[in-house]
Length: 323
Ligand SMILES: [Zn+2]
Image (tube, rainbow, N blue to C red; front, top):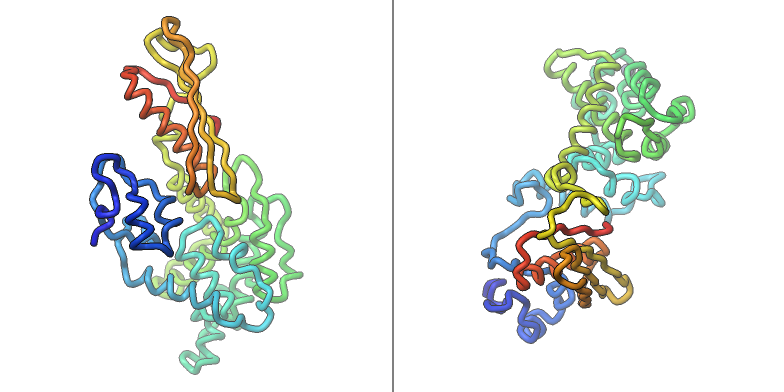
């Protein structure tokens, strides 16, 4: 059976009775997905990679993340908020995985290699002291300089960081100063990641960079990542309709809005067509169930309005939503 067997070929909507009969347990989840209006074909998609293609590395990370939520936490982490401090951070999945390893004391630092009898002489490549995780990421001079030069409102209180948990919780609370344009919360994670990559470059490639160069790298990587998360064509190239701005008289203005109820996962939509002096203003409304978020509700309001504009054969349309 294919997903398309559950979709009506004419209306491109779910065949409710069939979904209910074949997937009764998943009915709500299925109904909250809007099938493609253009009849897109079925395909497998792995959600944890950008391309949608499964790779073993990402599967391993997903499995590790999943198991970390289930296994009892190591000492001092019983009440640690993994969702807030790690999994929900706005950064690359590999950095979240790295933070998880860091908190589990699982990174192959000198001290960890020593304790496992792998390399008894490994020391901190920056200063030659014992390379514990706490030392490398917070107490080593290299790390201290990075933290002290970070463009943040209140610097991390390094002497008060007596364990990794305090360090990670503290770094998440850093507030970036404008006009750096960095998202709060995840910048500390990028600094930790850069300390780790700088350390590895020094050990394995014999390439040394200064703490300030490493900090610049952390800032530019954070920025680059944030920019890549923003759909450029939506934010940069879409003209923002201005009330009273220059719009030719053949263009219909359309204002859409939606109200969403979390408890019932339902939404009401409203839209108005106006702007053409020859045709009276047109007010429309609709509602629907199985709506998962306010954003989805706003998107559906726009979709309904555009569909109707197409049915009414409006040739030019300017759509404005409040979200
Ligand atoms: Zn050191």
